[in-house]
Structure formats: structure tokens, C-alpha cells
Image 1 (cartoon, rainbow, N blue to C red):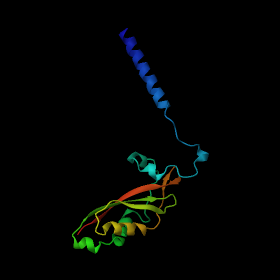
Image 2: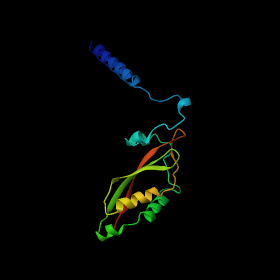
Image 3: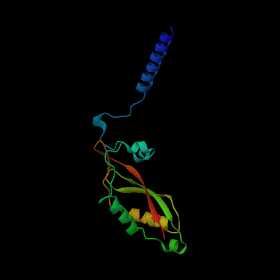
Image 4: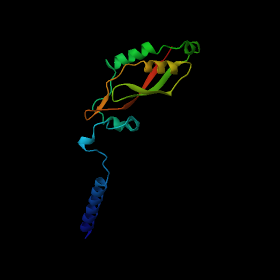
Length: 151
């Protein structure tokens, strides 16, 4: 009798799990309808797990080392920040569009004294990137970069 109750409980649990797993709404469009971007940057950045969807991550022409070199060369340490002995990291975000262009550049956390503006100016001068890809479709991807100013 006890084993029948346990078996019955296990079967009910399995049935419940099956129903729950099958009841999720799938948002995948049929293959012929997937002509544009698969996922928008506003939803792509919401969790780190979403970045796992990317088959190809967006990249700066020449790679990360050239990106750091570009920022270093184009975001000059402002004199006002030097005079006030200000140092720290400016966190900026931007979107690499499906065509590789850069848009929506903004400062997420700044340190002031002209450093924020220096980073905005440098990011605004960036060349186009190679776009991120999901299932061979280019997608918009929001990136966050730290730019460090130190004496």
C-alpha cells in the first residue's frame, strides 16, 4: 500500500513537471520569418544569460587591444581632472547596431571633471564594429566598457 502511494505521488509529480515544461509559450518565429534581428539590445542586455545566445560577439576592427589603444589615444586626460587629482573609472555603454555602426552612447557612471565628456567624445569617433550574430543574423548588442583615468 505504501509503495502504491509513493508510485502514485511520483507519477503525479512527473505529470505536473511535464505539463509545466510544455505550457511555456515559445516565441520562436518560423525560419522564413526570421529576416531581421532576432533579439533587440534592450532585451539582450537584461541578463548575462542572454549573451549566451550570441554565436558571434561584436568586435572592434583589429580586436580588443586596438580598441583599448583607440580609447587611450582619443580620451585624453582632461586638465581639470589633473589639476584636481581626480582619478577613477568611467563606465560607458553603447549599442553596436546590426550594421556595425555605434549608437546610444551614454555614461552609466562617471567621475566628472571632464573625464565623462572625454570618454563620450572618444566613443563617438569610433569606427564601425563587426556586428554580433545569432543564427547568422546580425543583431543589436549593448556593450558596457570601463575607461580608467589615473594619475
